[in-house]
Length: 410
Image (cartoon, rainbow, N blue to C red):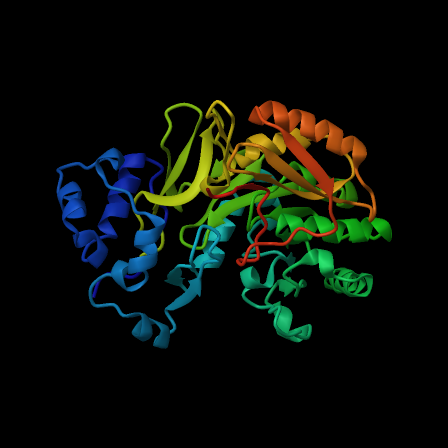
């Protein structure tokens, strides 16, 4: 049977990391395809020599097609060696993924301590006390189909607080109960979907609530808008730090001083563009049960001198009248310093025009000033007319995640 241990202390040298990644594909059925066999048979294959793995290919072949010969999911599960999850399906239908039982926690910590502030907080501890506020479909513990008690939502150092897919529908009594749970739990950090985290923060602001134990807020699960970040920083007065990754790959980047720093032991990252914004390709290094080479994760990224900037999902990018790509990040920058907005969605129509839905922080606020400012700036970016309205609800996708920018299909 192939070695199922997780590689440790990988060399920071890119060639050594790639050789390690390629070794994990030995006797893996997916890589027996002719195009892969030919590329991997080269004397010293480079990343650019290898094909890519698409989301559809992963969906079709995972998990069995990525397990080395001699391994079976049922047998590994029975032995307690792996866990299986399904992705949220943000980019389409969900994908089944498998990983070692301790792998998820290990790779998350490895990414977090790339940030010096977090490394100091963690010290030699494996984890810190956290309160989780995200769509229940992402949490793996809470469930929006039925309400679970506190004990059922407590797992080790984690308390899963939220049990609603749509935070905007929560009444004040339910939000107050959530705030009490967080206060009683006294977490070192909040682990949040940015939309859920910001809405919870607004409740806390209305009632003057603070959590003395809180040292930082960790955002993940979806793109973190400047709107949501500003709200949480204003209310809680602690750093908001973004953590980027996926169920398929693990956590790849952590924020430090506005730049995303790679977790180099977990994966090799590629930007398909030599300059500017390109697609992110991921080659994983530490999950022998799902070894991925040049996986199209579905996001745009920009390389900077110090690290990376995440630009959002490929499918969420818009187009200007002159054909220029406009990523979620590019659109989101227009919302910096705009007051009173709790959440938004910009929907571009097939003719290039767009409509902006704005949710106000204060119920009933028509956001007239914000509408005027944003429609002018967004019209300039798109080169097309943009209209806007203030609304009381913006619904998530079936996955439970929210989309800030949407390009409607023809």
